[in-house]
Length: 147
Image 1: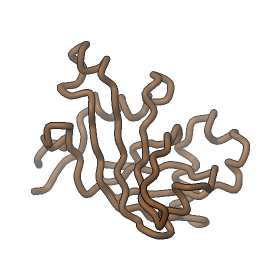
Image 2 (image 1 turned 180 degrees about the vertical axis):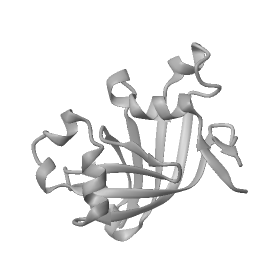
Image 3 (image 1 turned 60 degrees about the vertical axis):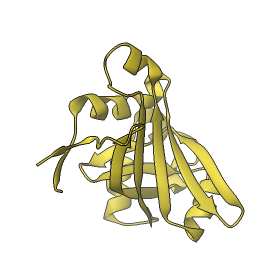
Image 4 (image 1 turned 120 degrees about the vertical axis):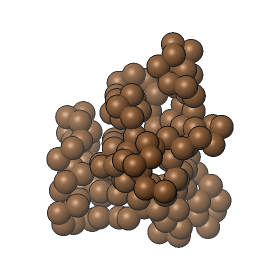
């Protein structure tokens, strides 16, 4: 089924996740098992992609060298209790691409918040683009609007 993208409410939740106190979590798996990392730079790149700036270059990056499949998890129970979201638990399954140079890396960097773009290590970071294969809430309902 073709999709037109995420609702404006979900877009805003992702955009403001760090400032709201609900950073998105990145799940990866490598040779030493799974890892979950908060990604304060996670953003919605377009209707089909999430992106983040990899500057710590630790477990998540090591795992992506082994397996490009990821899950991005958003947890904001307050938004659900306040009636803003039907479910406060959102999952985005996808495949990551690493961009150490080039136009995609620069496009991701250009969309970072000032906090992320000026953070120590940002200048040598890697742009990570995640193709969204599935986006669903905790009940398995598709988060994207049908075309």
